[in-house]
Image (cartoon, rainbow, N blue to C red; front, side, top):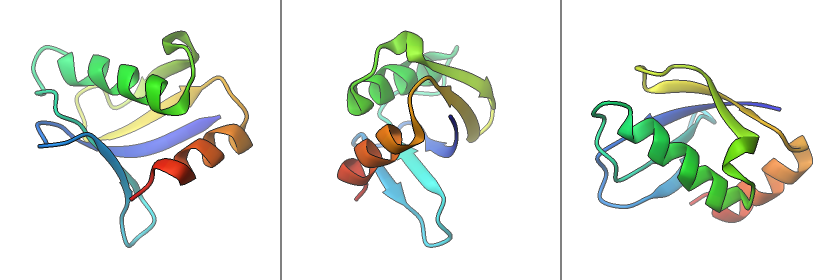
Length: 87
């Protein structure tokens, strides 16, 4: 499944929130330097969704706040896991 998110690096905490317009926003503590934030994002989502890191791939947005991820899992599984995490 494809998942489009907005990432806010260099945050105080790691969290996933839904903005008023319905966009998923992922706040992460990693700094946006030399791809560290992207690596951290994939590791964070892997742990949060209880999936291996190899099941999550960054398709678009390597240097952009808006990212498109390909997740090798069912849409139902991902949505269920996200619904438990979203603040």
